Image (cartoon, rainbow, N blue to C red; front, top):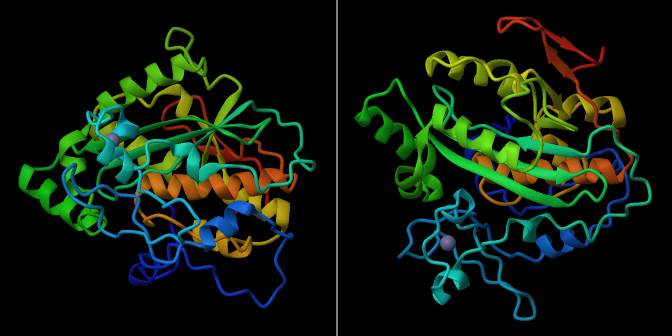
Length: 326
Ligand SMILES: [Zn+2]
């Protein structure tokens, strides 16, 4: 969950608004082609899919010379789209996550050699229990999108009635409650599938255990891995997996690199004068926006390093790299 201080009713409709300039000048010149592409989207968009046989909640009228922006097929990104042969479905929904994460507009000459080969942007949703587990993988040498892992997560300790209410409240407004119900699986199963995905990319092997191999999670704040995953592991009665013991809090890197405090994803985007897009608090859209902030920071010359590490035992204290933290 990418926390912000904005009121939810304002953030939901601020998807594509370019933020008003701050009193200070922008941190760095930003000449992103992708920014101008985004700025040309004239109406708010929802990267959501209501149902296979319905229209997306909000149609985007793109200028005639430009390709129409499409919401992501949330079945596809979970490996569950059964309509890949259906032309009208393909016309309506985006089946290529990379489309929104291009690096064409970034200047790469300031890119620093990184200690890590891959970064896994993770942005959980769910206050009581985890409801969504989105991960987007980026190659640090090219800043390019490599792959994604996304699952909706079914709570284990809640009654069906409570789940329905909870999902209606959380995802109904994005029009994705049906795909949630169609696809959500328990956290334990999500982690099993996630471990296969990690192994497929040679990022982690169960037999070896330990941290990720040449890679690290990137989160917006410490909440996801310091608090929420350990809590959910307790609820789901599983051991905290070893790959969750360290991470990069992007806000700490932001503070120490730009010397500016950003309280959340929206603040970082405002500071960098980037427009927010998609549905804020839909986990996969927040993860994509965090990736865009990360790409911007890498292109400005930021070094991504572990900012938080948990002690060896499950209840071990977390130690932080930076003195200046947020
Ligand atoms: Zn699809």
